[in-house]
Structures are given as C-alpha cells and as structure tokens.
Length: 162
Image (cartoon, rainbow, N blue to C red; front, side, top):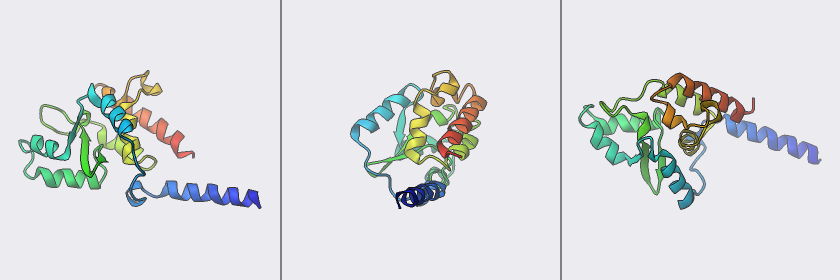
C-alpha cells in the first residue's frame, strides 16, 4: 500500500510541476531575510526597483509604459517578483541607455518559466552559477547572453527532472 501511495505522490508532483506557475496560486510566505538576500545578490548588477520606478524610467522610451510593464509581467517576459503587494523588477535585464530588454532575455525566461516560479527565476539570476564559472547570470547576461541561455537550459533540464 505504501508503494502505491508513493507512486501516486510522485505522479501528483509531476502533474503540478507541468502546470505553469501562473496558475499554481500565490507563493507561500517568503521571509524578510530571503527578500534581503535576493536584493543583495542583484545589487551589483543594477539592483531592484519597484514597478512604479520602472514605469518612470520607461516613460522616456515607451508611449504607454504602465501597459507595457503589465503585459510583460503577465506574459512572464521580464524577471519580476511580488513583495508585500508591490511589483519588484531587477534592473539587470534592461539596457540602461534605452530601457530595452537585453538581448537573449526572452529566450532565457522562456527556458526557465516552465520549471521555476517568479521567485526562483529571480534567485536563479542572482546566485553564482556553475555553468557560468561561479558568476551570476545577472552579471553575465550583458556580456554573454548565449552562455546565460545555455546555463538556463542546463539548470531547467535538471530542475525539470526529465
């Protein structure tokens, strides 16, 4: 009886993992310490702004910056997290000269999104990565978009368990 219960649990876990995070519901509680660690890990690569701060920067480059940001969040086309009902956006993914998304970001996010939720994606970009010789993907994306994509492919394959 225990073997069948274990196999049912494994099957349920695979099924949940196959559902896009957008439909899995809210992430369980994330501690203040975890949020602080995330902010610190992304500080050197441009930091993190609120959604309102990003909209202010986008005003000079887009006609409807709020609409653009909302669509990008819903489509999971940018790295973002929710913290205390506030959208938080890491800035490493934007070119500072025109606030356009850096080359390769969409393919990296498309690779990570099926296996990681928004918090896991943000953490993935901030943490040292073995495929990038111990550098964080956020630090490497402007210099080696292809290498970051390859790292995303490898890590998503491992995380997916397939």
